[in-house]
Image (cartoon, rainbow, N blue to C red; front, side, top):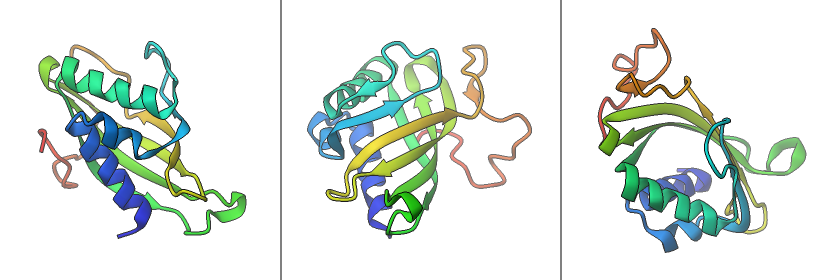
Length: 150
């Protein structure tokens, strides 16, 4: 398994367990997590802010995440020399009985290998009136996606 995928999976395990120290250890100190418009306090700047944000989500929303797909770019980082990866995920909001699907683009610090940037993209606008926010007409079951938290 690619070392970037290993780190991303470790990051998601830390998110799901609301482990502040494990979360911080996945990021450069000045990492940034960008979100679509509408999330208060976004973007989250710094490993501390990112870790606190996910701990809050687990404690307040009952959040859990599953990784659906992972794609890693070239080891040398391509033309910019910055290693990158893209994932597809599901954010399960247990206390709201809802879920949101989306993608994230990761950039890694070439020296440390830690996550330096995440750009999140949602599959659809977040709507409180539907149980799982996802793309209309996409066969999630047929493609093997999680239909409930792991």
